[in-house]
Length: 108
Image (cartoon, rainbow, N blue to C red):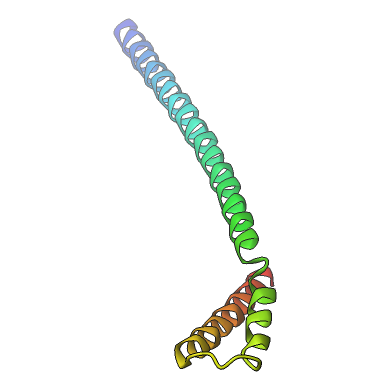
């Protein structure tokens, strides 16, 4: 009978050791996941900042384009420009229209 009690105590001790080991592994994995999540959040914030800077740069680059395009188009009537110039201006008008459409669509 005494051997049975000792054997049960040993099994209970082994179960407790396994439980403690599993808890330690769980805590290690949890710490790793939390670190990974923090790293990903930092990456997301960095990407958001870069995208905002890129959008600001693009907006600044095209800010005066519609005005300049309108001025160039209005001067077509006073001069007799080559067909290529007219084609270029029409092409650029289409690009500006597409950009405006994309910007308004992205804001929705």
